[in-house]
Length: 171
Ligand SMILES: [Mg+2]
Ligand SMILES: [Zn+2]
Image (cartoon, rainbow, N blue to C red; front, top):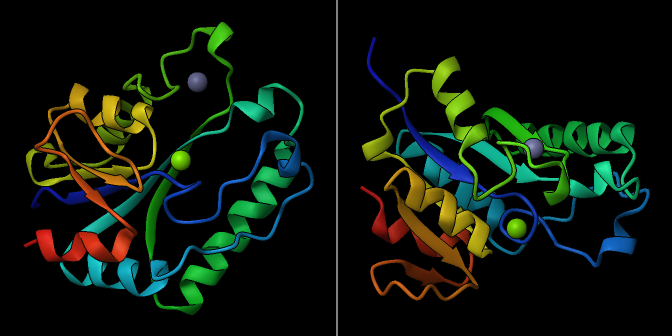
């Protein structure tokens, strides 16, 4: 079987809206950022599988209840399906920095796990996100990185205003 190419996408601030920590309490309905839905559709039409990689340390901090995270995820998938967008998988890290896990971005754990589960062509894959931690994750695997409203110190990493702007750089 052929290896798959993957769009490793951050969730908050990249696909859907980011909030202040305390505002995350009881959030179960995702608000999509402008242009996200058509962009995700195009990314999959170009042959990329979508894997969402998200730090959710507020779970461990008790601000987000695990069941609310799961409801949010369910609603996210439902809304994407409605728009004919399939997500291959979602990995999340519920830990705080103090827990010193191996999955909190920029640590590689979530992508390593994805690589165990799927036959991924890392060289053809990319990461998009709005934080240094997303960039660090891409750097660990030497993957292409797109900063969503985020300027990297590395001029090789493109800044885009939203996911839609990524399309022009993809084959
Ligand atoms: Mg983010
Ligand atoms: Zn973790």
